[in-house]
Image 1 (cartoon, helix red, strand yellow):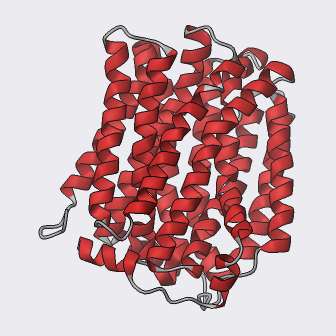
Image 2 (cartoon, helix red, strand yellow):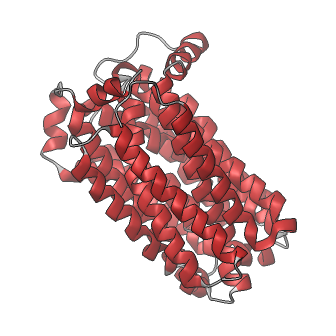
Length: 416
């Protein structure tokens, strides 16, 4: 598929069904979709300031505790492959009910964990439920919107979604310094209950043309159809690599800030909100650019910013400059690129499959969380001999892979 096809997928006149009026007239619906998609991100980030404390309290090494992040991301990746086709067959609401209830059970297990093994198990269960939120939220956007409207709504969700990893570490740091690490999981439990109640009351069923059957063969066929699209692979896999770099920062920065730089968990939580301003700015820029320049060019601009941010993150410690403000400035640049690239990439990847929105969203999510799991596993393995250079090195490597893939899969004759 050429970039002309991408432009047509994201700029064709929308075909609006009955669900469109519900969402177009109700900003609260967009907020609910954002909350559903952010459940997993909230659970991923709120406990990050507690990683050193969990290591001490459960008498576990830091790499063992970092496995709670890797296990979460790995499970989060796999279950999305299941939720996508199931929601295409049975509808969005039943999948959400099952998923959120599972998420709540995982939150409770984590809050009561007496060993790092129990905490890892709870994180797996938590992720298994949270995966439903992000898959269904993206699929609902595709059910209801089309063309530029879909791209703009995806950008709105992305802007709000960006606030979650930025603000939750601050909340987690405050909870850690006042109530301890278990409080962070009780807060995730409370949030899940609120979102569950709102979903039951407010979210209608938007899959008005469910598939006729569901079996392993049809699910494999659906994923095969998605993966045969060069455009999907180009955008989805590139987005997976850049998110892998982001998760390397999430996994490695708490130890750097708290253990090496000697700041408190609460102060650590102050810096991600600074970085998230880049995501908000990037998302706003994307909304202004949609329809004015090609999606390929928007994505390329985002990748250039991502590359500059990752390179700066690595160069500073190599030059002997290790300061909280330098790290934060590098992340602002990186996250600005993420805010430009991600809405464009997801709209282009999923927009080509209106009949398999859940399947396409699930495969994109699998790639993204799988890359996150891989990067955090590598982080645990490399910290012993790279030390503070481990997460900047992984960020730079994963971002470089994204740029190389995006450039290599550019079709001749596409518009830049």
